[in-house]
Image (cartoon, rainbow, N blue to C red; front, side, top):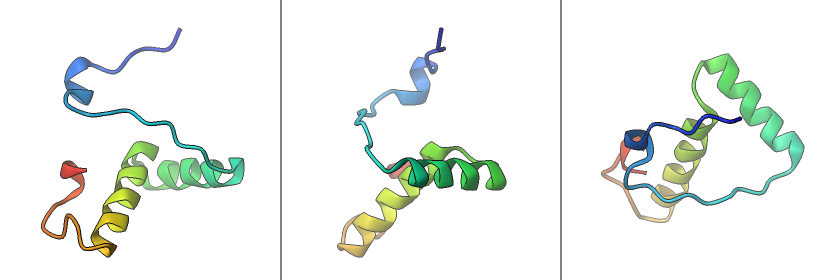
Length: 65
């Protein structure tokens, strides 16, 4: 049985599924392992960079995504 995250870890956040090629997800997991961070952190970093490149969230950080 998979453990659920603590309620305060995801409070106020929405959940969306991400579909990607298996090779892409494998690479993300590998990078996360090497850098000792979570894959979720990498996804949020990507979202922040995408939003900033489109003129949004320019004054915000990962904790805001």
